[in-house]
Amino acid sequence: GPALLFVKTSQGKEEGRRFYACSACRDRKDCNFFQWEDEKVSEARLAAREEYNRSHQPCFTHRQNVDRYKNFVLLPLSKRRFCQECQQLLLPAEWKKHSDHQFLCDITTAQLKSPSQLLYPLENKKTNAQYLFADRSCQFLLNLLTDLGFRRVLSVGTPRLHEMIQSKASQEEEEFNVRSLLLDIDFRYSQFYTEDEFCHYNMFNHHFFGGEAARETCRKFLCEENGERVIMVTDPPFGGLVEALASSFKKLMAMWRGTEKEGHDNREMPMFWIFPYFFESRILDFFPSFSMMDYQVDYDNHALYKHGKTGRRQSPVRIFTNLTPSVIVLPEEEGYRFCTVCQRYVSSGNQHCEICNSCTSKDGRRWKHCVLCKKCVKPSWFHCDNCKCCTLEKHSCGKSDSGCFVCGKAGHKRSACPSLTHS
Ligand code: SAH
Ligand code: ZN
Ligand code: ZN
Ligand code: ZN
Ligand code: ZN
Image (cartoon, rainbow, N blue to C red; front, side, top):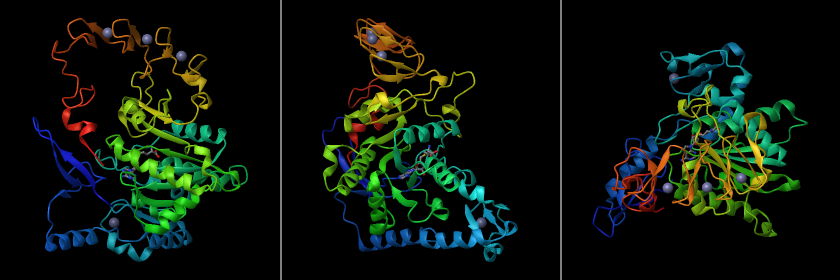
């Protein structure tokens, strides 16, 4: 889909030079598309680009994959193979072509219903960053949204949540009446879901690869027919630009708003945006109605974000939502409790600060109030009179090197400054 417009700034210069680059791949190794904004592109180069794109299409269309699936499930177990190298369900006629590839045999219906277990996670940090929810977290999210009365889930980059909903719906049929539509850039999923269950989608530029028909599928799904309320749940790659994501999510929200003739009385489409806590201020910049919940989202294949037995490695990933915080009930058996002053559930270590009049911890540890900074700070920080702020004990004193060279905010370097990028 469309590239994003970025700006390169060099130290000392006011105006930066603007260029287009791939929206989905943040690493030039994954996609080397680059074009200065004012650059004239020759016919030859345009043709070469088109040729490159043509030769990099998936070997089957979504439609073809759906037909292949229908044939696949008709096969006896002994003929159901999945090529691990090509990440593809194989029909018997294709076995030969994949004969020197590793493959799995006897693919069961249960396996077909959990594609996120069958496919290997695309972990390359800069593009897919596929980190799958631990079962506990996935179950928690699903219970939470069904308890809140939602019957439709727009799953944007949450294949495992989608899969849990799909497989429950097919097993328990009558009692479980939640539906999900998966929007994801990982086209491998088109082998397992129909066009009504999966859209190949890029959340950094709101591009539907399936064109108008796919867009229409999404729009229809967002219509709250028979009072079936919709919620969007998204878990984007953490390296992604918040600005680009927010712009796409606003377009999805607008799509939702457009489905209602009455206009939803200025309500926003309910949303869970799952993202690390240190992006709180960036998310609030774009969605002031959102608040961050204390719940720590855990992952299966992310060593750092696993809920360790010792409880020492704590996940920094949280739920941001535009729902009233008090309705987001967090599990008491995991130590969360309700703060009546803040009117929300907080982690066990999060103490209500009388001075801030808020439960101020962001990372789950107990924070301490600094009277000089007039705010609560991390337990490991102390107030440095030289720097006139709280910081780590070990810091290059007087240099305030923690802040970004461009915007002055802490937490990132100049090269990663969000204020340098414009979509
Ligand atoms: N925790 C989730 C997975 C989150 S990982 C779960 O268990 O369901 C991030 C997801 O976003 C992956 O599924 C990845 O394929 C998808 N993704 C990455 N880049 C994307 C993009 N540009 N557009 C849409 N989806 C993307
Ligand atoms: Zn193969
Ligand atoms: Zn409180
Ligand atoms: Zn405080
Ligand atoms: Zn201080």
